[in-house]
Structure formats: structure tokens, C-alpha cells
Length: 288
Image (tube, rainbow, N blue to C red; front, side, top):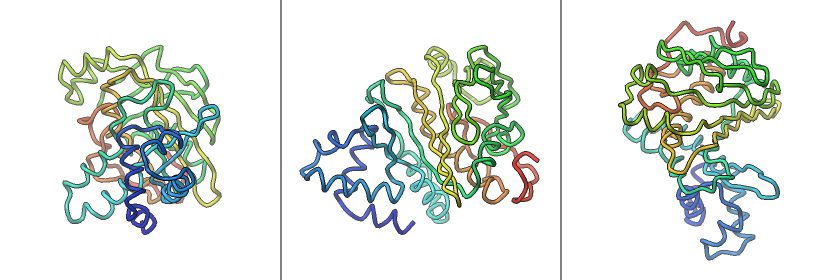
């Protein structure tokens, strides 16, 4: 946390974060265009922000795209500031959003977090239905083979669709699948009004990708959620939901405990919170 505060202390670095907050996924050249600084200076500031995990990068071809990473800010909100002022938690979690206007060939949502676990345990945390239900409130049921369907069970609603499928499955390294279908039953269960549900159901299906990097003593997890239409309603919702879900995953893997009720499912800010269940021993394998 010291590194985060040190990074935020410099006004030039705050301007860089403001620029990414306004339009995420920028190249170094694009970031330099909005600042009265030499390219080398901007690179040095970005390196400090990356070291503090406030900025994460994704390569697309020859371009290196920079994204505002909300994980450290979300950690400050949930683990420190919320002790004094819970209303600020939501305000700080919203810092990751404002993604509209990004070119369609670039990922619209990128989130990076570090978890004190192994790639094998993290993979189980992402794919075992009994485990995802604990921190997400959603059971994902699949054999996790490329092309296989995924059944979503959330808020006592079962969602099946032939287009809900596994796109990539490289155990302990990379997992990708299409996002779930927004059915009437799902909307009623999580409190979505008819107009919002119609907007969600009318959008093309997005996809989410989990990239797992083994750092020996911890794991770097990057979540890329893309494939949205301009002005997507789903996009505006998952920007709030993913930080809560991933914080729940991190907490459960590291401590064996679930976060307090209140985590929302990406795509539904009013979704049911994960149920409280007896915590497994923290040394056990997820789902056992």
C-alpha cells in the first residue's frame, strides 16, 4: 500500500491515471500526446504506476496498451477506508470504469490482481462449481473442454444456452468463455427492470478471459472482458461487479473465508450475494 500512495503522490502520475480513467487502453504515444512531458519521462512514470499495480498492460500485436487497474484502489477501499467511511468504498471501486469510447479492437475491461496461491488452486477456484458458488454466488458447470457448454446457476436460476461455451482452456495458464445469457428469470431473480433486461438481452455476447501467471510465491491473475458494443450496458455493469467477485476469490483462496455479503455478480449490480458456508481449511484444495 505504501507503493500505491507514493505513486499517487506525484501530480504527473495522477494525470496519467486521469487520462486512462477517461479512455482506457491507450498506447504510450497516445498518453504522451496529452501531456507536456518527454516520452522518456512518461515511460518512467508509467513504470512506477505499473510497479504499484495501478496500471496494467496488454499487448495487441505490436502495440502495448495501458489500462487503469482498480485492484489496489479497491483493496484500499475494502480493507482500510471502509473501516472509517463505508460510503467511500463504492466511490473508489467506480474508479475502474468510464470505458466508453475505446476502439473496438481493444479490450474494454482489464483487471489485474495478485493472489497468494498456486496456479493449480486458482484454476480450481475458477472452474469448480462448488467453489465459484461460495465467492461468486454462481455455479459454473462444465467439463471445461474447448467447445463444451457452460451452465450457469445463479440466484436459484439455471441458465443454459448453446452459445455459452468454453473458448480456450489451457489448465493453470489461460481460460476463456462466452458470457452468460440474460433471461427473464435471471432478471427477475436479481431485480433488473424490464427495460434494462431488454437492453442486456439485445446486446451481442461478450467474452471473458483469465490469464494466469505463476510468480512462484504468488499468482498474477489478469481478467480481460471484451467484445462489447459501443455504449454497452453490460460493460457498465461488469466494471462494478468484477472487482467484488475477484476480491472474493482472492480472500477465499488466501484465508479460507468468504467476504461479507454484498458482492455483486458482474452484469448485475443487484445480484444475490454469495451464501455464507462453512469455510474449508485454508490448506485444503478448493472445492474439497
